[in-house]
Length: 324
Image (tube, rainbow, N blue to C red):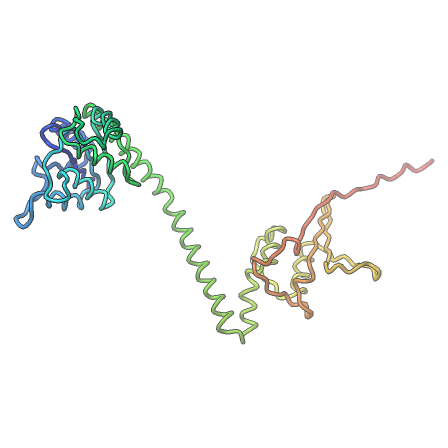
């Protein structure tokens, strides 16, 4: 079974007890600690020893960087220590990184910020000012710069335990959403396919008006409005006014007959009375052409006034008592 591999990066002599305690903590979690002094890094004969440390970081899952008061072994490049290059490598490889700094060093870092222009100033808790310069570099990173102070190894192990638990909980949460995400992606692909199909039929096959019209009318905004506002449970499409009329009449609506002297406002009215409630439906005549065929309208051009449903209470008059 694959296990998370955790690389512990720090200077050795001043932090060897912390490294040893972390080794036990990581093994107790069932993970694999990677430490140089335990022979966990395979060395070859072609490159410098430090290069194999950097290569090993590419194969781990997590890097724990511990910064103390000693600069440590100097790297052959970049005027940096080996442990500093290890952290830079992990960040470059986009590994999960946790950074810990001794509290005394972290506290004195504020003094460094106030006096970093003074090259003659001596510091109590570090043996090389480049440690503070590196901390400043890390703190200015855009990502992976959550830095925690520590006094003893248990401070580090306690924080890592909480972080690993949080990562595991997030993993479980994401697993429960896999089906939902998969469904959304499938719907997006379907929508893109339909959009391409509509564009193709519209642009490349303009002569096939009848076939194009059927495809476009399936997703016509009027059809969507009728389906939603009248709670129609099945799919349908409308080619013209007569199709709409039959559908509305099947659902109990009757078209209002306007008198000759009524003003023609370009709207047809449909009413339905049930359970002492009256539904009034207004539909714009501009949705249809002179032959009563439904016009194609983009969703961006749709206006809610084209199809408007309202509801009122029916007033039932009480009969007067008859005289005896």
